[in-house]
Structure formats: structure tokens, C-alpha cells
Image: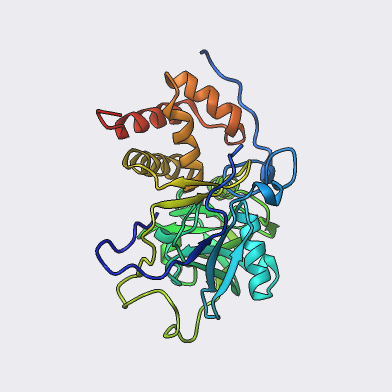
Length: 335
């Protein structure tokens, strides 16, 4: 998460803490649960087995937001997960909730390094990217790997987070980072999780052509009035507070300290493993796995914890061992 501008003058707070505190958040070979589709996963939907937590149990925080293509500043509050956040953004800007594709923090650009995942810094400024031009593309799968990394917005849309240089997709100029994958060969993917989309792309036969229906983020005609970047080279981080709002897939959002150095390193390593094994990136999923692995006594205990909470993913055993090793490597000697 953005850590702010260090010694620069602190800007006015971008978040109002109305209550000052959050409510409490709520060995051997393993049998795998088959994926259950959009109902499971780590990022996005409400608590398992019920609706959203009652308002009294949610942190009373208000964040400032803009539409990435240009808009007045709005105020969003009263959300406990990503889906609810999109709903509050839609209310603030009087647009349908389904128009919100994803959000970035402190920059209006389609910058996947600033993608809003499972945490929002208490002084982060939210930019919401909405649906723009739709396009249909014919792709010839000349190689087994297409060169795509997929993520999702936690509310039913999977989109492209990374395109490998020189890959099949990289050679198609009309396809870009941030594009939502709406359908493959006419099959709608709205509501699918990122790992389902990645699996479908991987299983497409080599040597054949397939059709992609994509929606790109809406682009601004004039970015001068945008409240974010200070120059052409990158974005300005507006926040400098240590606290974060943690958005959870199950249970209410909670106020926490910024991740420790160990947690940041471990989450980055596990996210890299997710990309390597599954073709997806998901910092909230990686953070959940680090939480489960931090207190596990051995790889088998980690595997059981992953099966219990994230069984939909059916992680292979070699992946679990690599996650265990990544978490161990990230621990400091004094941890």
C-alpha cells in the first residue's frame, strides 16, 4: 500500500474517521473440493452464509473519490467489502453499479501497481475506472501460453492485469492492460472468478483461433483537472497515514496497521507464485494465505488451512510447499 510522501508537507486528510475505531472482525494427502464458480474466492463478495454485516459493525470511514476519466470529488462511506464499495461509488456519482470496472489508489491512470485490492490506506484517494469502448478480437493461439495475467475486481469482472512482452497477446495492439474479459467464444464470463478465466484461456487448443469480447476502461479527453499525478512520469501518493481499512471476503471490514515488512514481502512472494502457477494475481488472496501460513506449524497444517478456507482453488501440493517456503523466506530472524 502507498506509504506517503515522507518528509513532504502532509496534505489535508482524505478520509474522515467518524468513530475512531473499527468493530472487531469477526497430516496425509488431502481431498480437494472442486471449484464452485463465482460463489467462492478470496476477494469480493459478502460474508459466507449471509448478507453484509449490519451498519453498526462497520468502520465509519468516509473516503474521497473521483471517476478516473474526470468528475467532481465525491464521498464514499459505509462499505464493508469491494462490492459494497462499488455500490457506494455508483450512488455518489449516479451511475449504475455495474459500470465500475476497478479502482486505483492515488492515480487516475490504469496503473496495476496501484490497483485497489484488499486494503485502502486511510488517506488514500480512490479513482474509479468505468466501462468504456467495447471491442471484439479474433486471436490465433500460436503458442501454449498467451502471455496474460488475470485478476478480478471482486464483484464479477475479470480483467487483464499484465501482458508479457513479446507474447501472443502483446502482438495484438488493440488488447490492453485493464481490459475486462467479457466473453470467450461467445461464453459470458461476467460473474466468473479470475482463476476460472485463466483456466479457460489455458485450455483453449493451440493452433486455433478464438474470439475475445473485451471492454476497456473509459478514457478521459483531458486529464489536466485530475487530482493525482504531478507529472508524466508517475503518480503522486497522497496519503501518509499508517492505518488501513482491510476489506475482507467474509466478515466485516477492519481497521489495521499498515502491513509489516515481513507481511509485505511474504504477500509479494505469494502473489508471484499465484501468477506463476495459475496465471492470476490477487493481493487479497495472497494476504489471506500469508495469514493462514504465519501460524501454521508445517506445510501439511498450511495445506489443511488452505483447504478449509480456500478449497475452491484446489491448490496443487507443490504450490502449497512453495507458499510455505516463501512465507518462511520472508520471515525476519527475530520474527
